[in-house]
Image (cartoon, rainbow, N blue to C red; front, side):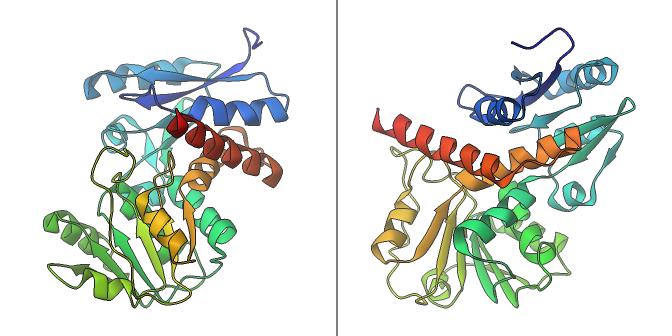
Length: 291
């Protein structure tokens, strides 16, 4: 049980009932023997973020907090500074307090990069990648591919039904070789790229239309990453049938959380604990889908 002096971290957003973050952070605290607690804090309107941020500044027990939808962008105006990763991706998912100052970071890209290495064996930037979606998760993916390795891809393709959003992403990453796919040609690009990434929430709900690309002709070494973590999506099922190497977003979720803790505490999380966190997400998702 946490003492009245223990540290308290939060996740803010709306809604939060589905969040696995308290459990995965709890694994860190338990394995490291820490007097810490992680709480969900639903905030109904963006205006109320200011009051929460002020309370954190004054708290002696809160070293920081996480941010999820729909506040990853709107949180920025209430902070004292932002890391370049947050500026470039346009999203803050981790806030660190230091001497009553709040600084925003994006740890999604680091969780994604680390899981690409572990789950898909991608230790250097692929020559080409196709990203489905152009939202915040897609921006984290582009940031990872562009700045997360010692090399950069020759081409990053973006596909989103909202062409304006895709064009905006391209314009914000002028230093990367980003091309927006419009109209036909999606399946042809899938047959040519090295990595396929789904950054959309499509596939999260089995009752909704899935990402069904009808994967047929691909590179033998195509690797597929679906950021959805709560189930084995139809996209991953297609990759499985084709004997392609694939991964869900479970490792990304766990590893971005571990990185957030490292920023709050200044203490490294062991690989064994990160793997336990990932396994928890996978097992919890499988159990929920089976119900």
